[in-house]
Image (cartoon, rainbow, N blue to C red; front, side):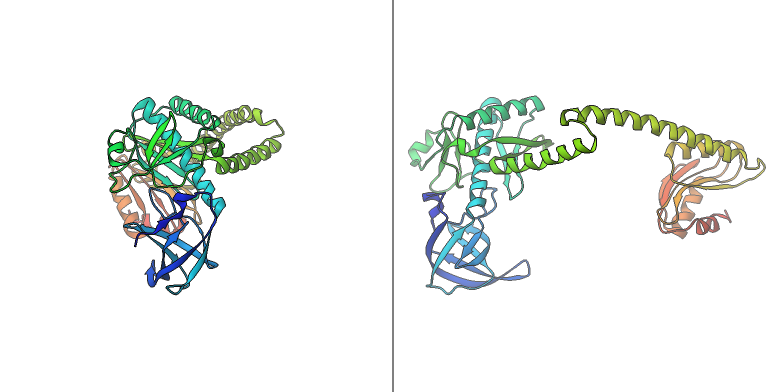
Length: 389
């Protein structure tokens, strides 16, 4: 028996009564649940890329809602006997948030389709994120213009229309759809901006969406994936980020609009400081290298974590003066070591192979120079491993 979808009748309703048609024990993800089927329900199932409604049946939390062949199943941790009447309650705040997100997505996708001819080929609406995948590339400037136009449509407070056209009417209608649909098609229309086949609840008027904000965009499978937030979720994001910005401004003793300027200056100062530290580190290493007797064949040095360029330069200087293995290990026993080993006359890969076999080192390189890293090994063990090379 196909479940009567009360959310199609009134998407704003929060409570309903229904009769339990069946209740069967199931195991889902190694958890015992009870699959309850009602004659009718307000619970929207997981469908069309959207997560299901939340709420209770006779005060028992509904953990999941699924649909198959028109029959909607409610997953509960406790059984409800068949034939019993139940009182259902959905989380109206969660439902309305999903309605805001989904209606906002229709407007955004309708504008994309009209302006660029791209289709929405992937949609996901969870409790934290809304993503749309389009089969074409959009620039940041284009995305910004679409966002502005979507918010203009929201401010027009247009009525969102729900219709069930006949097969003949449908054949004459230009509408968006991500898949082939069997049976009666439900059409959601934002007049002048979008006509789309959709099974989900929507707000009555575009103004109820409040606002739409693009959160991120990235290239995806030859097109673009865009993430948005609408209404209450967008406000929550703005509130959180504004609080973070206010705290950051206070910690920098400046106004919020001056933060980018201060950060750029700090980045410049840090880069200059890093350059000076690198120069000092290189000079210090050169002093250490001068103290090594020129007639010493093999050289193994240990130093605190330093720049990779200094390690490479040091090994190059050592191999120019010493005929054996020249190795520099940077790090500590506790944090591990990065190393570079070179030799002007021997195959450096032999040293790397020994470290891999004896101390589980990772790395590789050429005959003249190798590099890698070690974890959980002391400097004493490293020296003992290499002493017989």
